[in-house]
Length: 192
Image 1: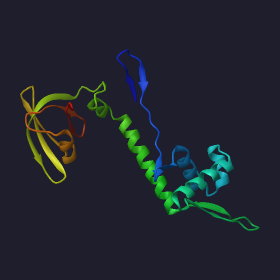
Image 2 (image 1 turned 45 degrees about the vertical axis):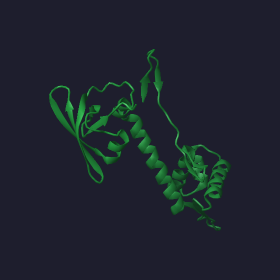
Image 3 (image 1 turned 60 degrees about the vertical axis):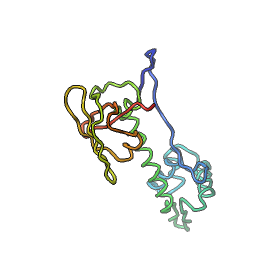
Image 4 (image 1 turned 120 degrees about the horizontal axis):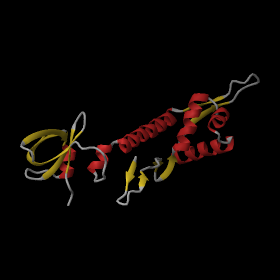
């Protein structure tokens, strides 16, 4: 996502994702590429070649992961005279790769969500926001219904999570902004 500073300079929001186990980094983008390539190729040698890394680097990365996790992320099979060897990702390796991809997708979606960036105070192009005052809050077990009286004489009802209501500490009389997305109404409040 590109942002503009007050001086008009463009800045890019970016981040790196990695998984840790007991405070030690286990899997980052390079490791995810390694596991995915092994999954597709069935061989460390072919995987290393596919992603442009040396066999030694890939093998060292896998050994480091195994040592930190205490469980193997891949299982190798020796071939005989006629070949037949290969490498498979273990269920533990599959789980780690799946979790990394899930987090990577979540963060990519977050970075692309312009309404989120406006809600945290960054200027974006969206204009679908209405200022108003909270009239009523109904908390359920999981969700909460928040009725907002808009400054133009109308009221909007937003269905948001109970957690969001508690995090924003929404109370009747609070000044808020209703940020309208195509499929939902979000609520923002200046935190003091």
